[in-house]
Image (cartoon, rainbow, N blue to C red; front, side, top):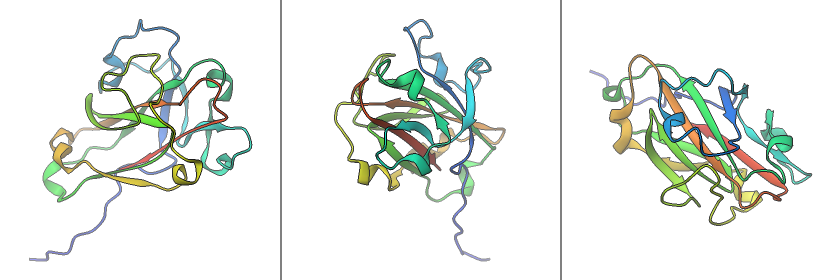
Length: 177
């Protein structure tokens, strides 16, 4: 039997994404659940964000400057990806480019956060900044302990992207698994 381990990408940059910049808390927390109906949300592909001349242009394919800048510090993202069996993976990593913070959910369960409050709400903002140079490099986050959340029939990575403030000159979320 071969013991060679291959790196398999379950979700890559350029994946289909649905995005909502919430205007109030009426949506509750169900938006991160796998069966949530996001058909009315903005569609596009990752990365998601906006930039006022700081060098993120090449990373962004879904531009949210009109919805976010000077309006709202956060966005809900839903990124579906194919079925996968936890038993097929020895390790599972979430790779994130972000400015300034996020909370990530796999099939409705929180798996990671950076610069984010313990209990984020619809109008939360990042608790600190993430330098632009660092935001352009994937941070590897070990989510192996959450691999049991993977479904063989299909998965949803949901991300609450957080900016440091509504007036921020830039915002970026680029996830990979």
